[in-house]
Image 1 (cartoon, rainbow, N blue to C red):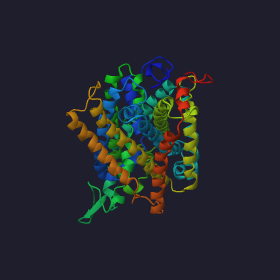
Image 2 (tube, helix red, strand yellow):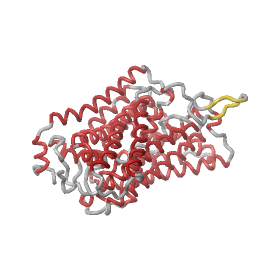
Image 3 (cartoon, rainbow, N blue to C red):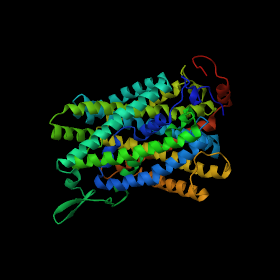
Image 4 (cartoon, helix red, strand yellow):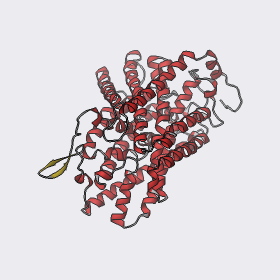
Length: 502
C-alpha cells in the first residue's frame, strides 16, 4: 500500500503523538457528535430503554469489540476501515466500505448541523428560527464550510477544536442537564413522562395514564425510530484512521474504544431520561428538545433565561466540533484509498499540512446540495428524519461488511498479532459479529419504513427516496472501481509537486 509521509500519525505536520485520552474523546465526539440525539430518544419516553438497550448491547458493544480487535491488529497501518476490509476481501471491497462510510457522512452532515442551527437560534434569543426551514438550510451551508476551512488548517488543529468542543459543548452541558434534572426531582416538579397521553408511550389504567416500559408495536412503522436512534450510536470505528497517531497503536486503540463507548452510553442514557422527565411529551421536539428542557429548567427553578443562551452557545460549539470530527475522519480514510489508486489524481491531492483538500472541497459541494432540501421542505423534523434514514441505511451496509471482515480475518490470518482479541475463539467471534450483523440487518429494514410518529407525507415517496439514495450511493464505488485507470496508481506513487507536499 502506498503511503504518503503524512499517512503515519506521528507525521501529521507537527511530529507529535495523539494521546489515548484525546483520541478517545475524538471517537466519543464522533459517536455523540452533539446532544441532538437526546431529544429523539426522549420522544420515546421510558420505552427509550428498550431502544438504548438494543443499540448498546446489540450494536455499540459488538461494533466496539470488532473495531478494537481490528484497530489493534492494523493500528500501525493507515486507512482504518479500508485496511481492515481490504485485508479480508480485497481492495475493491475495502474501497466500497470506505466510500460508503464517507458518503453516509456527507448525507448525515445536514442533519447534524440542523441541531447546531437550533442551538444558534436559542443562543441569540430567537428559538422560533429553529423551525424556519430557510434559516436552517442557510445555517447548515455556512457552518459546514466553516468546519471545512478549520479542517484544512491541519489535522492537529482540527483535533484540538474537536476535543474541546466535545468537552465544553457536550460533556459540560450534559452534566448541567443531569444536575438540573436532579434539582427538578428534588423540588417536586411534575415529571414529564407521567403526563404522556399518547398510546405509543403510555396506557390507561384506573382512569390514570401510566408510562409504558416496552414499545407499543402495531407494525414496523412503530419501530422505525430505532433506525434513527441506532445512528446516534454509530461511529465507534470512525477515528481508526488516526490509530497510527498514537504512541503505541496496538495497545492504545482498544483503550480508545473503551473510553468512547462508556462516555457515549452514559451521556445518551442519562441525558435522554432528563429531557423526558423535564418536558411533557407533547412538548418534546426532535430538533429543539434539549434547549426547551434547559429553558424550562432555567425559567422554573432560576426565574432567568440567560443561562439558556450561554448553554446554547456551548452546545452549538460542541455540535460543530462533532461535525468536524467526522470531516477529518472518514475523508482521511478515503484519501488512503485514493493513494492506493482507487480514485483519480484530483482526489489524491493534499495541502502543505497533509490535509485531503480536494476531497473536503468535493464533499462541501455535495453537502451544500443536500442541505438545500431544507430550503424547499417546510417540515424541519421530517427532513431531518428522512436524511437520517438515508444515512443509516448506507452506514448499516458498512457495518455488515466490517463484521464479515472480522470473521474472515480470523480464518485467513489466524496468526496476525492482535493486541485485543475477542474472547471465546471462533465461537466468540461468530457470536459477537453475528449478533451485530443481525441487529444492523433488522435496523436496515426499518430505515425504509416511514415513522408513525412523523408526518412524512407520501409513504411511497419516502421509501422511494431512501431506496434510491441507497442504490445510487452503493453503486457509485462499484462504477468507479469498474472504470478506474492504472495511471491513478502511478500518480499516487509519484505525484507532481504542484501544491501537494507528498
